[in-house]
Image (cartoon, rainbow, N blue to C red; front, side, top):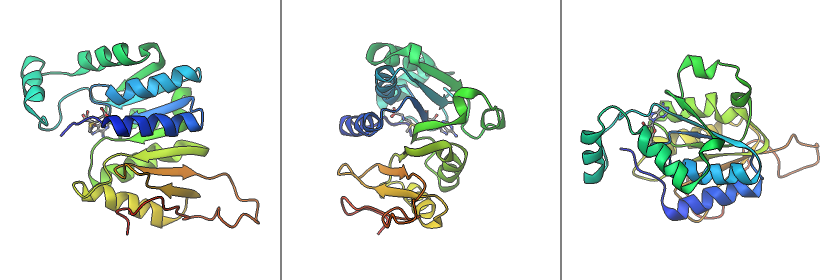
Length: 216
Ligand SMILES: C[S@@+](CC[C@H](N)C(=O)[O-])C[C@H]1O[C@@H](n2cnc3c(N)ncnc32)[C@H](O)[C@@H]1O
């Protein structure tokens, strides 16, 4: 059910990316590019780029009547709407669209320079447990120390997203700090710099609470 982020979520995503002057951004699951456009504005400010991974093909039931109509009119792809939105609200020249699934081996193992490392990854593709874990393993782990991985839809309606994020957090091999900002539908995982040895807060599995969140 493809739904874009809310206005409040877009503000939060942009603020989180701006706070680290993200230059290399990735969105997994872009649908019609509403959030891609926001990310492309941050990329523009920092002379960077956004990689957008999405099959650009309808893969699940539309969320509402306008989407049903759109699917009937454009049964093969929503890519036109993607570029229209990115052009209206962002910087299309900053966007590399990778038409495909985030799990496609050609993409995961491509070795292309623009896919090697990221400052900021926003995961919003398939909302199933294995898919979220795979997106984190394949893409979230490419975030440099000091960067961020954000997960959309960490809410009761998507228990598998919550379970995947909980297991990523509890697995503990990554040095991170996880926050649940007020909007609380997005989990923000900050990848920490290597410890100096006397930094008590920077241990694997640290979690900062800004709000009650669905992991508890
Ligand atoms: C919830 S929508 C994304 C909304 C978008 N992030 C936004 O804020 O406007 C989910 C999108 O993920 C795509 N998708 C599903 N599985 C995917 C995968 N494995 N890799 C990439 N995209 C995927 C769907 O086709 C759909 O366009």
